[in-house]
Image (tube, rainbow, N blue to C red; front, side, top):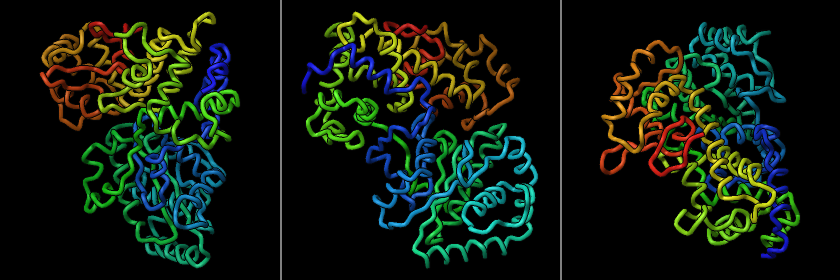
Length: 456
C-alpha cells in the first residue's frame, strides 16, 4: 500500500464526491454484488426477501438495465435473458406505474390473486390483453380464467422455441396497502402466484419483498408454501461485504485504487483480497479513520462501525453503512489527522440511526409511541420495566387509536408487544432475561444506555 497517496484531505474529498448525499440518486451507478447477494438474481429463485435498505429495489432496478441482463447471461446457464417489470416503485421502460388510488381500487374490486395475475400477464405477453385501463384488464382476467392461462402457456412455448428466457419482476408490494391486513392479503396472493407459474420453462418470475412481512405466519398459510420458502434468498450483508461496497464507491478515484492494490485496474473488478481479507480491509480503513475510537480500550474503528449499526440479528443495511460513512466525512474537521475522525464516526452512526428510525416508523406508525415511551428507561433493563413504562404512558390505548399497519403477529397485550419487537430485531433478550436495544434503534428513538453513545 502506498500510504503517500492516502492524504487525509484528498481522501475526505474522494469520500464526499463518491457517496452522494441522496443515495437514491442514480442507485445503479456503483454496482457491487457480493457472492451471496448475486444468488438473488438467479431466475430459478423467485422469492427475494430483505430488510429496508438491503438492496431489494436496487436489484429490481439493476435487472432492468443492460448491465443487469448481461450479468444474468454471464452468471447463469441460459445466455439469452430478458427482463420486464410487472410492478414496482417507479415507472420503467415497459411499465407505467398506476397511482396509489388506482392500485387500491383494483384490489378492492377483485381478488388480490387476480390483480397480480393481470400485472404478470401484461409484462409477460407480447400482445396486450383486452382493456384500455387497468380496471378493464383486471375484469377481463377475472372473467376469462382459462383464456388468460392459455395465453401464458402459448407465450412460454413461443419463448422456449426462440431460445429466450423472460424474467418478470415485482417490487414495492408494500407501498400501497393502507393496513396490515391488506399487506398480508396482497403478499399471500403474490406468493401463491409465484408458486403457480413455477412450471413454466421460459417465463420466470421474481419478487422482492420485505423480510418482516414474510415473517408473519399468515402470509405463507397456504398449501406448498414451504416449497417456495425453501428456495428463498434473504439479502444479508457481511461486514466485509459492506467495506467492499465502500471500496467500490471510492474506486472511481484512480489514486485510491493505486494506493490500496496494484492488482486493481478497473473500478468494477475489486481484487479478491480487498473483498474477503479482513486484515487488509482493516488496514485500509485504519488509514482512513484511524485504528481506535479514541484509545486502545475504546474499540477498533473497523468493528465499532458495524457493531453500532447492526440490529439484533447482527445485520447492517448498505444504506445505513453509507450514510454513516458519508456523515462521518462531513463532520470531520479539516485539521483532523485522518480523513475521518473517530468522534465523527459516532455522529455518522447517529444520523444513520435517525434514518433507520424513520424507515421503521413508516412501516409501523405506532413505533414512535412504543419506543418513545422508553426514552427515560436505561437499557438493558428488565422486561417488567419496559411494560411498566408502557403502562405509565397508556400505550395500548394510544396504539389502538392509531390507524396504520398494526402488525401484531404475537397477539395483543403489552407482553406480546415485547415479543413483536423482538421478532423485528429491535429488541434483543440477553442471557439473563433483560432486554437490550441495538444502537441503530436506541439512538434513532432517543433511548439511553449506560456508558453508550448519547442520542442527539
